[in-house]
Length: 88
Image 1 (cartoon, rainbow, N blue to C red):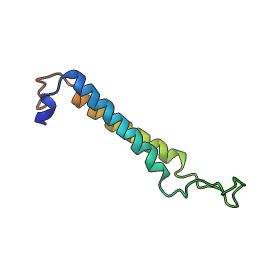
Image 2 (image 1 turned 90 degrees about the vertical axis):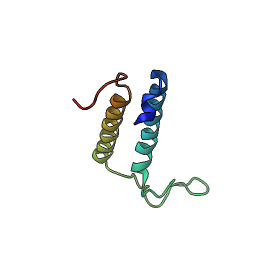
Image 3 (image 1 turned 180 degrees about the horizontal axis):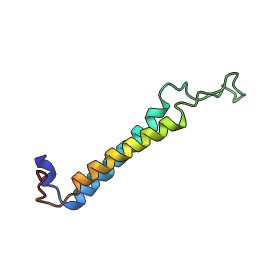
């Protein structure tokens, strides 16, 4: 991308951190899909049905590992030295 080459190193670091925060939001949002929300009644009494816990732990781990790997690859690509040739 041409616009990446115009950014200084500090600006690239800001982009990497912003992408990491975006992946954090996605990683927190995805496992909560399908949940019913809070299991509290109007007065805070115990619910009659247990709350939905979302995805199993192993699937959450795979989501976080995938997001971390993508973030690492994008970070390496963004923070490569200027003038680096990717064709080799």
